[in-house]
Image (cartoon, rainbow, N blue to C red; front, side, top):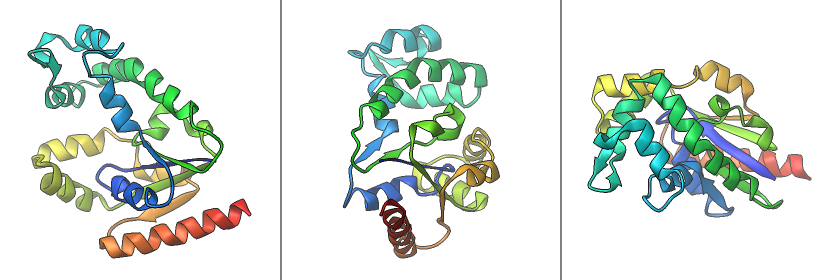
Length: 190
């Protein structure tokens, strides 16, 4: 069973996946995508060709420079996704039939819902997400808002999910929500 864990930016997807990883395998799609920036990866030269030599620090791609480009240029962001997404999808398809969770930030934007048996959405209020991005990631208010606006409308994401976790509270409350959700998933499997 493949279960996607997606959600709005800064909603706590990674925290949910840390809790899930205590009991189940979790594939992080961001980690798979980051491998594409390694100079030994097949995607490396295509990324440089698309974004230019300015994204390099010596031979290494600077991810902050990449982010600055793709969050201000939708066309380049989509072109970059066309380079990276086939590698991510390949890793998802390799997963076996046991219970596997897949942390995937932009599931709906990719149109990959059919790759999964169930979809868990982690979300939070917009103002909380913006505060988290500023506090935890060091973004300015404007950078946080740009990133928030780049995602699919949270209402659409909620409507497409099988399970929704609202993460506006403490880590302890999040843990309780994850446990409840796992119970429901296990009951559905039985």
